[in-house]
Structure formats: structure tokens, C-alpha cells
Length: 115
Length: 115
Image 1 (cartoon, rainbow over the protein chains, first blue to last red):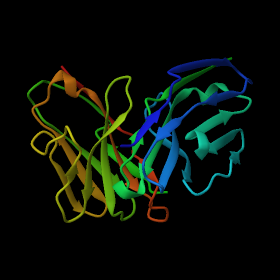
Image 2: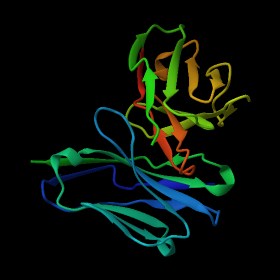
Image 3: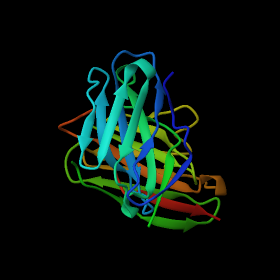
Image 4: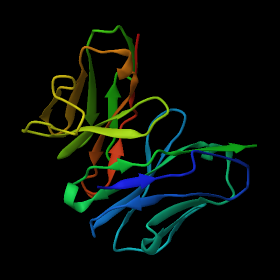
């Protein structure tokens, strides 16, 4: 069975600090997909990134970067020079090729960036 | 990505009543999904809705409680039947991107409070 663990329930930082959100996953499938979504206070879920299990290249998009390591089953998300607008709940999610598009979400990490 | 809208955006309902939530997409999509997010918690998949077939429900969710319709490739409804306060949640629909079918994009959600 697939499982996603986000051990950090809440993180609070001061603006301009770097922050890393951890995500650890479990799966028996060799083909799977990992995601990060952002949920601001307004409630909508915003897609940030998708990674497939065959692509371990790290990715950078502006202030966001992702580190995918199959050896540790982790897919961590780093925000550089955080801003108040980054305050949100961030969800890591997993889908397995064998189970179609069914997404399993982690419990989420509430990030608060203080001015 | 597809533009997804949901109606209503929020509602307050009395226990024992039913509410139908609509999800509209601006393009044709094969698969639509319904998720529930209970207060302060993560998202849980309720069911997958394909056009022209019965919805597929996840463990713990049944058609009598959450009937789903999928009359065409751009529209779906989820009904929350015989509501109780435990049904108070955000209900979100999502669709697979037609170009990137491993990625789901989410609607803005429907915030439901049952008194």
C-alpha cells in the first residue's frame, strides 16, 4: 500500500529564511509519481510539481527547488528566501501506475512566514 | 491546465438534508475525481468518475451516501446525502490534465458546514 509521510506538522520562519519541507513515501510499485501542492488560506489546491520515479534530477523553479532521492524514498521541497505569500499548507502526494491516478496525500505541513 | 469551477463555493446545511455540488471544467476530460478534506486534515479520495460508467468508490465511501453523476466530459456532480455534522468538510473535484494525464488539477472547493 502506498503511504506519504510529512513529519513536520507546522513550520514557522521569518521572511527571507530558507525552509525545507520533508516528504517520505512508501510504495511497492516501480513506476510512480510524486507531487507537491500548495493550499493557501483561500482553500484551493495549487499544483506545484510532478516527478516520476525514473527521473531523479533535482528541479529548480525560481525560489522553489525539489530534491528527489529514491535511496531514501524522499521528495523534499525547499523554498529559498521565503516570503509572507508562501504561507500555506503544503501537501506531498503519490500516485502509483498500477492504481491509476489515485492520489495519496500526506498530512500536510503548515508553513507560516512571518514578516 | 484546465479551468475548474465548483458550485456552491460554500454552504451551511441542516442535518438530514442533502446537498449537490457541481464541478464544471472548461475542456473535455476523461477522468474526474472527488475528494474530501475534513477540518485540519489531508485530502481523501471519495470516488473516481468516468463519463458513461458508474463511479468507482474508495473504501469507506458508498454510493448511497455520495451519489455521483457524470453526464458528459465537462461536468460532474457529487451529492452529500442525509448530512450529519461529521460531513462538514471541504469537497474538491479534480481532473487529469489532458496533456499530462498523470497530473491532477483541482477546483476551488466547496466548504460545507452541517449544523
